[in-house]
Image (cartoon, rainbow over all chains, first blue to last red; front, side, top):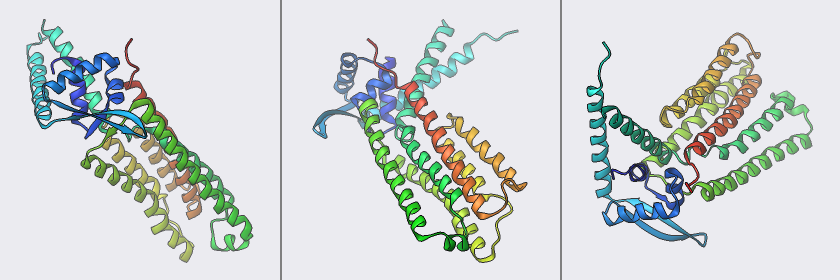
Length: 95
Length: 223
């Protein structure tokens, strides 16, 4: 979740019902292998569900965020916003 | 240290928020799908320029000419629909698929409905009967203002970041104000022609710029 590409994957999935492998690859800019590794980790953690199916006789990998994944991404965003606000407060002010 | 943390946090947030917007509006941003319809609207504008848009004018035109024009418009819309389907398939192949939530589908249909009403209600429900019965038109091209409002709604719906829609809405506003000054003449045929041309330009320009916005974010995978 803390890894930027995983945050992008989970945030994108949180704003739609599901997305396929090609879309996630395009939005993260990751290679097949890297994206597969990230998705496997997220799936192991129970944050996403990976469904393999056929569309017009072509294999298609669909990824769906689980309710647990949705809670986790919402919580992460809350913390990220807090961190941003905290960093703003700590920024040295010009005289 | 603080600056580094803040900077990396900002980069993460910006990247993830952009991904969120693209995923939420993936179908809406597939702008090339609407370009064929924009081209058809341009040809419809040409037909409107040729066709006499009055009861007497239509009666005076040979039936065969009217049928040819009707056939042309119907065929053009059919070809545009087919082209749009092929473009959708290209987007799927190139950028993958995103399934919208029920809420997103409803919001999309609502916006499409608002856009359709913004074009049709002022021109066909208010002005056309007024022109047919009393030979009178509204002093301004009211459809341009409602279409502007529709475009602003679309801009809002897309996340308030695609500012080319504000420019298009501004253009419509300028044309609307010009129509109040008598440019073009305040008649229903001219209002219809102007609104059709404006819709065609908005569809083509908006579609191409949406496509560019989509492509700029959906980069090719790294090596």
